[in-house]
Image (cartoon, helix red, strand yellow):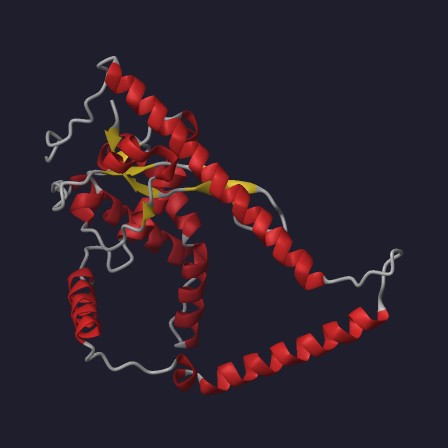
Length: 273
């Protein structure tokens, strides 16, 4: 039986979850510490960490207690993990945690589209299903931390989400009506773009000079940019194939379990306590 996000948050070790979340936001805590220090508010990093433990612990407890609300569109979410290369310098695959519509996954498998979910109400997010495949469960703490992070993007109690969604809907309406006033990004950051373009031109000049001087044994020019593009394309291809393969694997597991009557997903009959 697939479990929901909230079931996992309730069943996993609370202190380990908080520790994992503190590690995820460790740089934010350090930045806050430095900012407070610059204002003359002196605390030790340990004190800031202890404050964070109390704050994020309260946030976790809130998510554990939330009453789950069913999805407004009737579509059920599924979270899972797959191996993805984030850092090209290390080329070490790390767990990535996408969201997919359960119904799409069952029907389309590897072709099912991944979506963001940070705009969904926390009460809906708590009702998302979590894949029970081996790799996802091996990284369940990291997945739950990722969910907590995404769910807090517009406030730890969804306090800013409604305003953002309303403003976004208003902008979409204006865009469709042709009344939305837009400003070129160059006009917003003129100095930054001017400097960036100058640096790009300087880089191209240097690379052209280097290519004219350095040749390999076959008398062919060395093109560092082409090599980087090829490497990035290979990494992108690997990430896409890894994601598609994982979705295919999960689809097969779910279809098999449904076929033999082991799961019904409890669609429409989730625990809304």
